[in-house]
Structure formats: structure tokens, C-alpha cells
Amino acid sequence: MSAVRPVDAASLILVDDRGKTPKILMGKRHKDLKFMPSKFVFPGGRLDPSDRRASAFGALDHQVEAKLSQRVTRPSPGRARALALAALRETFEETGILIGERDLGAYTAPAGSGWTSYEAEAIWPSLDGLDFVARAITPPAHSRRYDTRFFLCRTNKIAKEMDGHAGPDKELTELLWVTPQEAKKLDIPTITALILESLIEQLSTGLSPFRPIPLFHFRQGRHLCDML
Image (tube, rainbow, N blue to C red):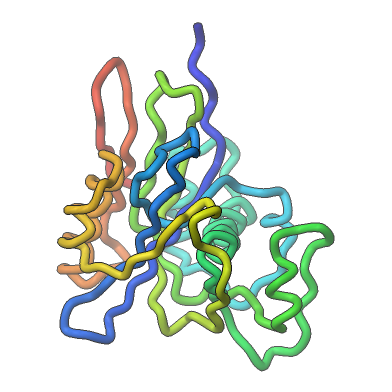
């Protein structure tokens, strides 16, 4: 039986570095979900067609765009941009946090998309300040597979926070702001632990735009980490 082809997905690591020790936002997945139930994860999800059509403020750093375009079929700036926007949209849908810019005039969302709250609040999703910190592909044995790009964004890019997106009957039942070291002690998937280790190292070295970015994947029964 051939492996399920992974679908494009994106996740966002929100970093609050206003204090002495940076904190990151983690969410606990609902216990009834089929994929990673009850685990603490970063907000995120699969790429939606509307993410390719959504307008945005600013552009990805050219080094970020270049690394997002490595090891992919038919790379393009549009695909890299859509993945970054997917991370922002999914973060809002799961946490109620809108990342973007105000005072740029009216925002028009793609019809019938998850971008309508940006339109209602007149907030433009912002690509400025987004960094790329990791990529992970679900192992072939899984029935659901994702090729997930993990982005980093600082809390100074938050335009608004809305209630009601996380709770007992939601995909994320609770949200926690924790240090990366505290996050490692939560009930997290193995891949999240690996990404946290890499994140700690990247933060400690200042997030140089030329640093290598880990790609975690699985081949012939072995977990591998290549660098982009």
C-alpha cells in the first residue's frame, strides 16, 4: 500500500519577547480529534485555496522565500506567500488572534473564506516580520500526512485578539503562554519537541537570516533532519 501524499500546511509560533525570557503560545488539541488528540501544539492547519487569493501587507523576506522554495515541486513566490498567509489565517481561526496592520483602509477578503474577520475589522494580514524556523513532513505510515512549514511572529504584530475561538468545544481547548523550556514539559508530539529544540537554538543565536532551517522527515524507517 502506497503512502498517503502529504498536503501543504502551515503553523505559527507566536513569540512574546517583552520579558526577560521569551514565551510562546501553545494550544491543547481537543481529545476527540483524530490527529494528535489532547496534545499541545502550535496553532496551524492545511493550506486553503483562499490563501493564494488573499491580499496582504508587505512581503516575505527574500531569504525566507528562498528557503520555503527549496525541496518542493514547482516552487514559486506565490506558493511561499500562500503558506505564510495560511499560518496567519489558521492562527486566527484557532486562537482569535489577528496578525496584521490597521489604518491601511478597507480590507476585502476572498468570498466565502476564513479571511472575513480581517475584512470586518479592517485589518490587513501582514507578511512583514514573519520568519521561517522549521519544516516537518508526517511519516509515511500515518493515514493523515502534512508537509508543514513553521513560521515565527512576534506579538508586536498582533492587531486584535477576539474571544470564543478556543474552549472546551473547539479544536484547541486551551491556550498557554509558556517559555520554550516549559513547553517541553507539556504533553507534546515528538515532532513538536524537535522543533522546540531547534527554536531554542535559533533564538539563542539571534535568528540570523542566513542560518540553516531544519527539515524533519522520515525515510526507510528512520527519522531524518536535513538543513535548508
